[in-house]
Length: 112
Length: 114
Image (cartoon, rainbow over all chains, first blue to last red; front, side, top):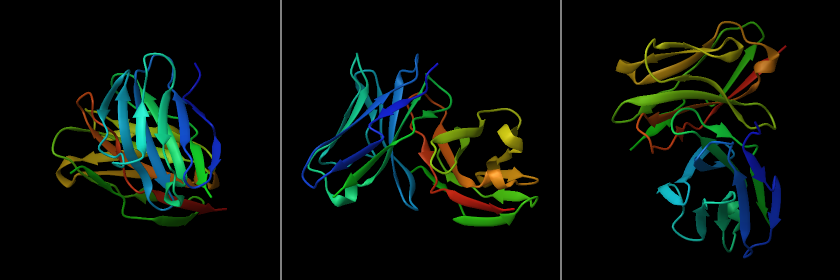
C-alpha cells in the first residue's frame, strides 16, 4: 500500500508566479490535510478536505491560497502570485474516517 | 481556541539518559492525542497515540506517553535514549469527533550525543 505521495518534492518559483502542489492520499483514505512548516514554527494547519468538500479552511491565508480535492485525482494546494514569505515545506496528510494521519514527504517551495 | 504547547525547544542528551518531553494542550472537549517524530530529511511518523482507556500509552521504539487529564498534559518519555533518537518531536491534539483537524505544537528538537 503506497504511502501519501506528494509532488513535486522541490519547487522553485519567482515572485508573482503560481505554485501548485499535489497530494495523492493513501488508498482508501478520503480525508486530506495540508500543513505548512516553517523553521522553528512547527506545523501550521492550513486546510482539511474530504472528496469535493472543504471541511475546515481556518488555517488558510485569505488571499492567494486555495485547495481542492476533486472526485478524481489528487488534492491540489494552489498559491497564486507567490511571495518570498511563502517559502516553506508543505506537508500533506491523509486519514481514514478516524484515527491517525499519515504524512507525505513534503513539498519544499522556494520563492526567489 | 485549540492549542498545543511544547515547553522544550531543544533538548540535548547523552546516550542512555532518560527523556521526558512536555506537552500541554488547550481544547474544550474530548481529545485524541498524538506524538509524531520527524527524523532529519524525512516525513513525520507516528510514535504513539491516545484515544481512550489506559492513560499510559506505549509506542514504537521504546517510547511511552502518559495522558493526565487534570493537567491537560501528554508528556513523552523514554527511559534510555539512543543516538538514533536524534529527531524533531511533535505533540498533536484533535477533538474526537469526525471532521476535526489535527493541531500541532511547535516541536522539540532532540539531539543525542554518543
